[in-house]
Image 1 (tube, helix red, strand yellow):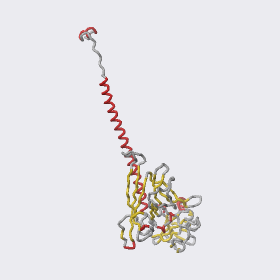
Image 2: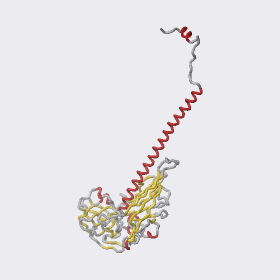
Image 3: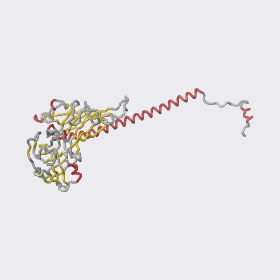
Image 4: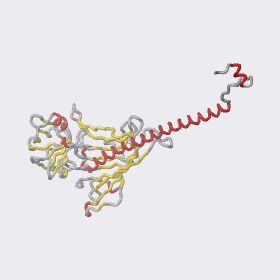
Amino acid sequence: MKPTHAAWLTLNGGRRRPQRGFTIVELMVALVLGLVLVGGFINIFLTSGQTMRTNQGLSRIQENARFAVEMLAREIRETGQVPCGSTLSANVIRDASGGTPVIPWWASTYSGFVQGYDNTQDTPGIKAFGTNVADRISNTDAILVLRPSSNEADIQRLASHDPATTSFTTATSITAAIRDRYYSRPSLVCDGRSAALLQIGAASVSLGEFDYGTATLNCSTNLGSANDACTTTSAKTFAAGSLLTVWDPAFWYVGHNNRGGRSLYRAGITVKASTGEVQSDIQEMIPDVQDMQIDYLTRNRDAGNVLATDWIPASDPALATWTSSTAEVVAARITLTLQSPDAVGADGNPLTRTFVVVASIRNREL
């Protein structure tokens, strides 16, 4: 039976038992413990976020470096390479727009198929040092590689060559896409014995022909041989089975991007559709590349192909001419410095990593 209120008071000495809560000291202790726990959670959250940002920055650097190394090394390896395995004997491309015929930078094979530029050597004919977007950054190296396209879709097999009509006939029909690809395009024709660099003027889908007699940059229609002044040339007829492909040069350098940072750029060539003019095509390839330094390994071809033991910069006197047989470039060592776009390093600065790649030039007969 539940006791009455009076009985409950009697059992408790006639007094009401006071209700007790937390004291101020207890509340303060609980508050401090709560703050410690919250602070720990906040620290774990911030640390996890910082770790995530750091990992993302490292992943981005490594991904950019992988693409840069892959593209650069591939094009350097293919420097001067001809699909037929022969050597270039005739380069008839000249630009006479300034009055005096000169060889454009993208066709300057007489100066070497690979040409390096040290961090103090300006390149105004290609891309000069400057502060505008896509301008080259001083104190960074650059490299020019001259090569035909490595895209097999660009290669056309010839059925015949008629020097009298300055035309090549293909073994298969020419599509509209191929015609547009070759229109006014610098191209390479080759067989097992020699190759010639020339400009294609036009292409006919219906006739399956490429014409080079109407091209504005050809100083001669003789494709057997030519000196650097194009004053001495010899004729040649390329037999059936010879190959034709487009020319795909590249100038790699570090330049200013439009975000206030630095990027790795590639200067190639494109054809202006309305006029057929060959123009430089500047493309930002890899962001956040801060620096590029390049050294070269050479050999003395005249002394029994003895390799040099030291890597040398582009400004070394031995590389005063890039066609010397006593200092023939056989490999390039590229040092790339990349930086994360955000300041996620432990010191409050962007992460910086350096990558080194060595690319051997496959074609030794430049």
